[in-house]
Image 1 (tube, one colour):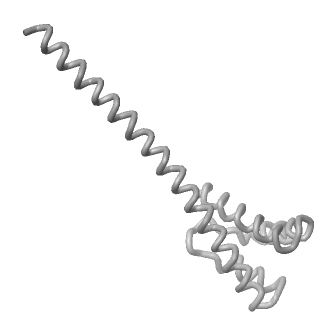
Image 2: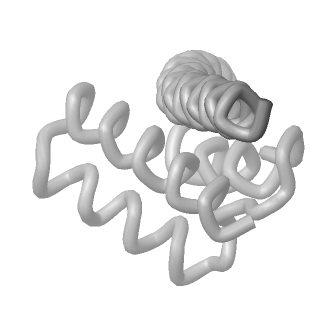
Image 3: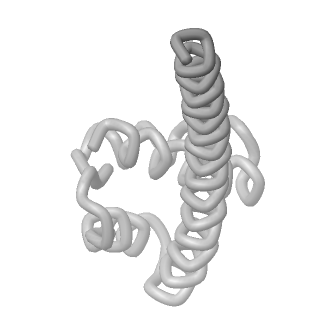
Length: 113
C-alpha cells in the first residue's frame, strides 16, 4: 500500500501546486499530512475530502477532489502501462529462452541419431 500512498501524495501535491502555487500547496499538504488525512486504502478519500471542506467550502472541495482523483487515475494508468510493458518484455525473454531451449534439444537429438 506504500505505492498507492505515494501515488495519492503525488497526485494531491501536483494538483494543489498547479491550482494554488508551490508555497500555498505546501501549506495545504502539511495540514493534510499533520491531520493524518492521507489514505492508504484505494477508494477511501473521505478524510481528504473532509479536510479540504474545512479549508474551503464543500463545492470547492468537491471540485478539488474530482481533479485529484482524475490525476490519480492518470498516474495509476501510467504505472499499469509501465508494469504491462515490463511483463511484455519478460514474456518475450521467456519465449526466446524457450525457443533457444527447443533448438538446443533438437540439435542434441540430431547429434545422437
